[in-house]
Length: 84
Length: 184
Image 1 (cartoon, chains in turn purple, cyan):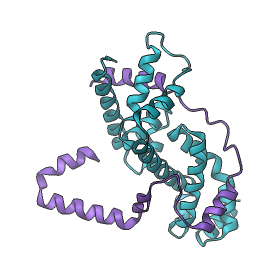
Image 2 (cartoon, rainbow over the protein chains, first blue to last red):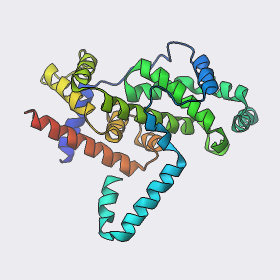
Image 3 (cartoon, rainbow over the protein chains, first blue to last red):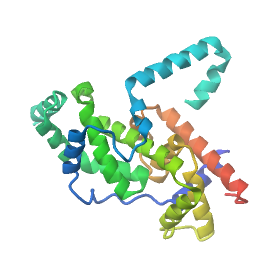
Image 4 (cartoon, each protein chain N blue to C red):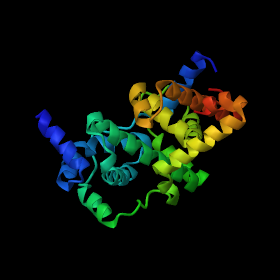
């Protein structure tokens, strides 16, 4: 895909999904909801059960695994860089 | 004034709820707007704004006042919105996604007459099928035309990585459309 194709795809995308109008803020005061969430201390119902995986320990484990794989298969480094 | 703001940030870091409320009042609109750009859904944006500030409060001890609150809050909001995109993509059936996106593209402004409503609808649908991390980069950088530097900071990646994700999103989108017989 060359630069011309890329620009054409961007234009098509903008025509298909116009930018969101975000002039107005939330339709209600969200502070009571935040307080309720703080009291409950639970993960949001809008998020999946595996959202707790966002913890720093998971990032560390992922990094350790990746470094291990790179140590075993150094030729895979360009592939990892591509997917970053 | 500067000292006052700094005091509030330090108090928040120590877990002061009043300081947290002050920061919430000051930043909720910006956080909500940023999330709405990503989700394109006002109701989800409200729930995710609450989720974001809950995560912010949970992480208050790790906050570095020297780095500023706005960028930190935006990164947390982006991560919450990314989780939501992943979840909705997994949960929604194709027909539900199609109905939602068709409703979104029903009244485009300043549309090219050569691009029919059907093409716009199929493009929106194909965009909804993209992996969440590519979709979020393309949404912010291409559709919402946010500065790439800000997108990179919000996603916690480099500007070069943002460009790569956008490129890959557009390439996958084009491939999907070509499979449907549409040559963009």
